[in-house]
Image (tube, rainbow over all chains, first blue to last red; front, side):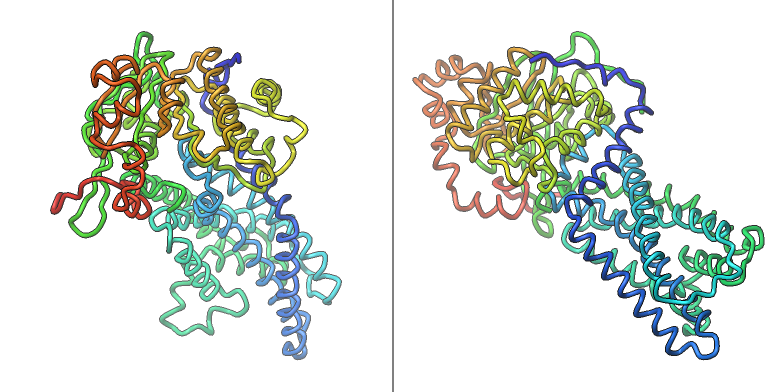
Length: 278
Length: 286
């Protein structure tokens, strides 16, 4: 059995790029294999969005179209961003559940590569789901998108995706630190984001003590910016007050997430937690 | 990554005084490895014989950079595995008792993924996969079937193929035949022999199968309660303990038979609760 060692001579950046593609492709294979579950989840998410849309129709009064559009933007954006967050935060739990965690963590590709690969797939898959949702939802409602500035909305969405990938990286460390309870903790992260980001309401309605929390949620700024772009046709440039916090979070969260993940990995290696059976 | 390469003339693996203990409860630690020192020369197959809970898996995890030792040095081809884990990871791979795949994915999808983590592209790995699977007698018509549809024996062959795809210079085999039916066991052992003869790999084989150790290994070490209590060729061990077979060597070296050690209920209990499993508990350390 003749074996060559050619790949050992490849430059590091090339090996890491191949590994990033490996993670993204593996997730695509998994989505394909779990297609029926993915379909069930997508249908559930669309039904959920439609239900929320009809609340807008029912309670929107004279400007039902605007209220419906406001709610649906929240619903769709939340579906997209929470999926990115969940996919990233499940990086470790998923490997542990499948029993592959030891093989992945003893491979020579970096943790940044793993998380970037997961993030890349999450963004691409999230966009496909978002497009399908948008197509179905537009069949049911008269949306108030006459003045929409789609380009600005897409730009803000792109910046926010980066922040959410970083935010997910921060959360991904939890299942590494606690195999039994870590994933539940990430659900608390998601729940708090849902509460304070103004998905279905303006954060002004929150109790005063809770409102400051929205300022550290990237979803809050993304929603503000995208709603302004789609409902009022606001330009990208005029959304600077929403864009700069997203840029800062996009620049800070991924390195913080990676740093924390690295620390968590060392802790897990020291305490023997980095193994299949938790 | 630091530009560190393997040095010519270095041994495949040198372990010096490896210590590892795990916290069991407040103030109590269980030793998984106690002062383990071992050298694997290039091209050599070294077997580690020991009952469940003796520390074999911890030893493999320490070498494969998944567990950090509390003390001692781990050198792989002259590179410090604790200081430079990612450099060392390029040169080693592992097959464990559990095949550990994405169960819904096919063997091809799992192999492509496993290879990419080591920087092997699809274009490079596809012909290699065909060649390796052919040489291990895997029916390539089943390459698209989900792993969960394959027998344990076939899964274990795919696990060996996954390791071979990345051309490891040091292979860590952690009970690769445990739980296999006799025919699959023979197939996997034959494959390990093929790897040994045709591939310039050094192998550390952990097993509790005496026959397997004697048939496949150049030297055999006996690990008990985290301590390497003896090491040598099968003939040397037999001579040293004045016995005819490895079962008697084990009995003479440890004072118990492998079977009795396997079914020590105290060890079993610890095995199920903690990686460290069997070892003596020392109170108040650390």
